[in-house]
Amino acid sequence: MKRKIIMSVLLVVTVAHVSGAGPILFGSAAAKDGGHPQLTEQEKLRPCSECHQIETPEIYDEWYNSRHGLGMVKCYQCHGTYENMLTVPEKSTCGFCHNGALEKCPADKPCWQCHAVHTFKVKK
Image 1 (cartoon, rainbow, N blue to C red):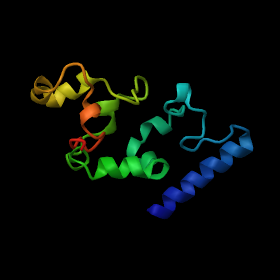
Image 2 (image 1 turned 180 degrees about the vertical axis):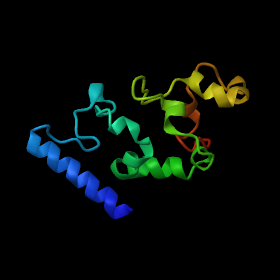
Image 3 (image 1 turned 120 degrees about the vertical axis):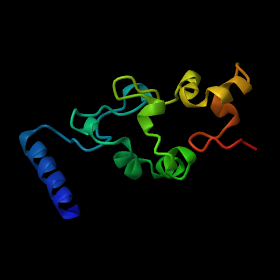
Image 4 (image 1 turned 135 degrees about the horizontal axis):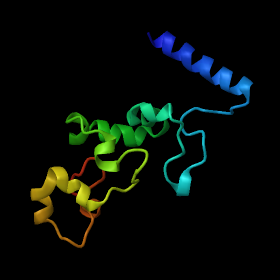
């Protein structure tokens, strides 16, 4: 199975290169406004974790080993979809699952000012 996936990716890259379409691998396009790189429609169909496991392994590992990772909270649930992605989610997004915690926290501070991103352990 793994071999089939690798061969499929190599075939697509070769066809794209020969046809002049240019590179199509994850992160190949220039980042928009310093945020997430532009993605093809095909790349948007893949889970965020497939690319982030390779491109930003420290962020992937941080999420994967966190309560969010263990609870299978997906990237889009906090960061939005590709069409409305937020590199830094709005505090109100946390309230969908953590409304009780938001009521106890200072209203003038974002969650990550006191909690480490992804793990959300209290910063020391």
